[in-house]
Length: 616
Image 1 (cartoon, rainbow, N blue to C red):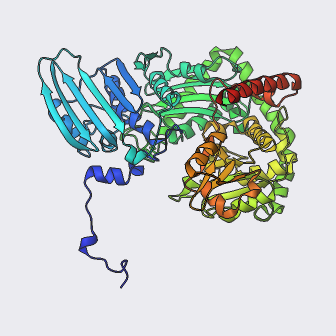
Image 2 (cartoon, rainbow, N blue to C red):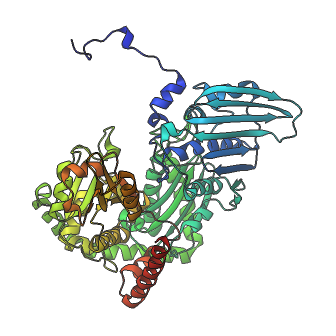
Image 3 (cartoon, helix red, strand yellow):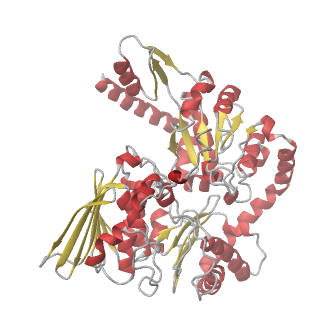
């Protein structure tokens, strides 16, 4: 009899709360990660603790939060009311324990399930929670969720509030490091959404006076067409402007939570902008002409919000509360009244916005005929046979593995062939480029439809109409690690920056890091991604190992590729920040200023040569 068939009572297990969290951390904090992505679990741990402090501030208690990150030790101190001392251990270690079930106390709170801080506790090698209330204090220390110390103090001079210190457990997360840029972005967002709140982080002070208006101004990477429109009301705040590029940029929030994947409030916002502007100008503009180049932020406060995951990145609530209006009607009605009033009171802004919409309309109509022919061509061409080796599961599917979906954009048949043979056919697709793609900088969007390669790529990604229809969670540029490969990377990044910047803003574009060297002896093989790694491998493997320099992806066998596109895959996310003005950046690196660029390359080559000489 097989083991699988031998099923009895002894096979039934009951896990306690902390063991369940440690065995299934993804259910509570999403992915683990190593700190290289903003949504990695170590940042979710920080967020879960800060959320509690933010809730105190929203209730009118404590105007400052102090946060320090020292190596892997995180300390978060607020000056709210402090957790009731008799329940201090319970709120950190008993599931479904908290004050937020009482909607009168925490009517529009970020977290309502009594889970967050328990997950932090269970996933930390050390977790200390201390509460001070009117001169009395209690401190409880845990290790991996188990109490190791519990002590009380009397007649203390500390201010009221709660302090949490934790160290994320490396036995769960593996080796990790905090990226302070990700933490700063998260903390700044908290201040934008809570005007007047002071957050101090490692000696820096973050505070906002103008809410989402400050957020928009801080994150603009170009001069907007008109000064941002800032509108506020009960349980809603928005800021809106337009830029000059393609795509739509949104920063959306619910009860202070950054909903990076949008949700019902963001969908309502997009609908409301189109509806309001059509009615203001009394013209039936196409929604895409109104929203192209929009840069906007929206924050709503919803009673007992429902999110589509524990990490709260997408709002699922249809109503503002048990007895409130629908989210859609609430947002549409607010913009219909307030945005319409603003445009009537600011005719100069209305004039600039109207001209922008007309320009978008003119360009769209100019390429409509080309689009039709391009669609027909895409239908006739068999993507599966010519360019695309598709996978079975896509981001748009209702499948638990949908977020694992990815597409490799490769150069040439040999590289695409190796990846195709070694890929996971369920979640990994391959799109093969034919040589170097066109430099699209300075070209209008009609080039996408006139250029067969870009037209087919756009069709494969399914992003012509709306990026929300994107078929793959990760778009991975996989090129050789040589000059030509680097050039193709730049050309592909230019394509996305120029026409689909939201692909990058929403964290979908990556570069595949492939090994430069293989160092091996009879017992072990080491793949090296840099000269430093090669030297370290040689030193570790001993005398006379065999060393292979990979000139291109086509030289790597399918069996070896499994090492690089599976669990050990090294990906570098392509990021955009406010310090990256898209037009200026593309003009310098991809424009016609050959002399300036040549000088830049020569200067940096000299710096690199000096660095290498120092190493030697």
